[in-house]
Image (cartoon, rainbow, N blue to C red):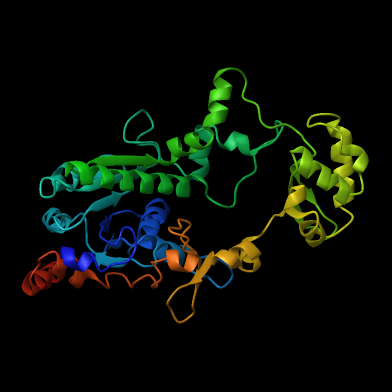
Length: 391
């Protein structure tokens, strides 16, 4: 893609081309956000099945929710990275890309001759981002793991429990999108540095250290003595209402606590300071909130009294804040598939304007010939690669 063509792409990263060598969730979150910011993301997928994200089903109707939401707005290049011809193909591709993102085991791509050092020979301005579980060195660099593995080792999982209770098993992944956000920050920082120096560099992000960063204040506190949580306060908790729905209460300041006490008819508790006679306050708030449905408390006292909903994902389409900011947008497909909008907003853009990756994920390899041609491969060379089952 010529520079003049890049300038026509919208978004703050419209001039950036990203070669996505990742698989499954960690890289998909990262490059999905880059695509929403305008980057031209080309996802490299193995011949045959492609990325496993294409088969992660969700819900009773087997919706490919992960693939639809995280791989939208990208292009797909079919390429066998283990082929003897792969190094030469990638070298030619890398010459016209700004960023490579990969999530393989540390050193795996180096062993195939397609690592950072090999590709920077043809493109010294290349920014290379590695997303790993534990990092590229250290005793756990080759260790397998999943979301709760990293949360557990990082000390973050223990903080999800309360007052010594066993932590809950999260239904949603936490360390993976956190590491992806870290990777996006690393990539954009490296691009800014490249604008000054003209040189690319290698950056890293991993699930373990991103999770440890999330609980950094607890780590600092714990190094000075036993790590402690927030403790039990009537003004900070999750309560069940008369209809069985849960609400959050964060009335820890005098004004919000007084508003909550007025709403539940317990003005006698309003003068008690945070930490004062908490068992009696917790009992009173628990009993009062259980007398009415959640919607009543959310309406009044609402957030002024520290009360907010515990939404389920399907509730978000009707959440007033989501509606106002267009936090859910539709893909440009026949089903108008709803997806979460880009959370990064620039110059007051709403979610719809900020979400530039709105096309549905492409079929496996749909853009192979186009991307190769942009990199300078001739029609005959592309045909030869197909004949050799390299692409």
